[in-house]
Length: 73
Image (cartoon, rainbow, N blue to C red; front, side, top):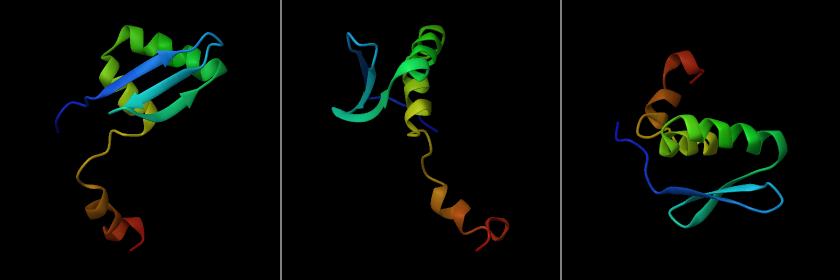
């Protein structure tokens, strides 16, 4: 699986964090969630952290997995 790319984020003066993916807003984090995001992105791979926080980390096998008998189909 290729590593995530194309993410960036802006920290606004009111403490809100807006996560961007290829120029489009992917997530807006406020309060405690914004604080936890900033702490986590400072300590790890920022691209991977932003992909995980936006839910944009699943690629390729979602359709196959949803058809699996174990998943109720």
